[in-house]
Image (cartoon, rainbow, N blue to C red; front, side, top):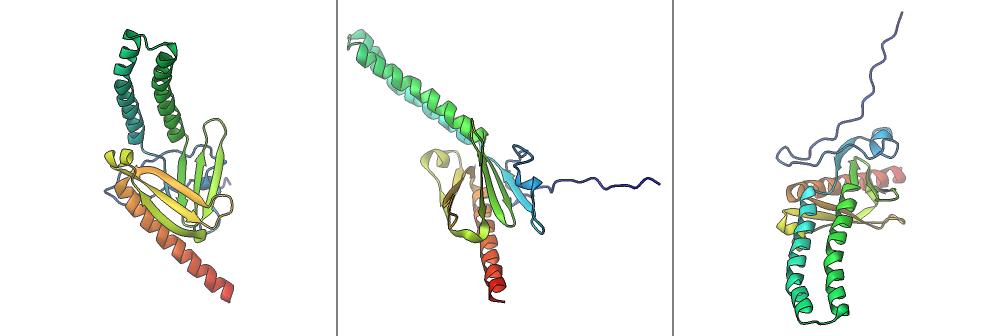
Length: 203
């Protein structure tokens, strides 16, 4: 008699708040995803990546930079400032789109995964790196809104921990509503895990 084996499924990441549009992405590689390596009692809460809005911000900054440099380039050619001046302006104009393209590649190759016990950051354009932070090691959580992110209604979470390999970690360019909810959830989880660890070590 054939036995029926229940189909195994990865746990679905849950939204932190119904009103917040979290970025939902597939893990970059199943073998490296925390969803494929959950420990006993651990559950996946959220998977995200930096917002696409910040990429548009990078390219908007690049366009503005090139517009600013266009008049100097015109005068450099018209008034014969010399090849070095013209080359310097052209180089400055060419570096801006290269910078934006690199930032875009970094954004699209970064994934964050939060579980009830750890935060995993997978990143890297040419080579892939995977960093884990145990939540009980977190010392402080800080929210930052640089000008470009503030204009895009985004924010970043900066995490300091006692982790030797990754004492400082950043969850980059998330919608500001998600940032508030995510920061609070990480804080509560880290406090709860520290308390449980102290109780376990005391017994």
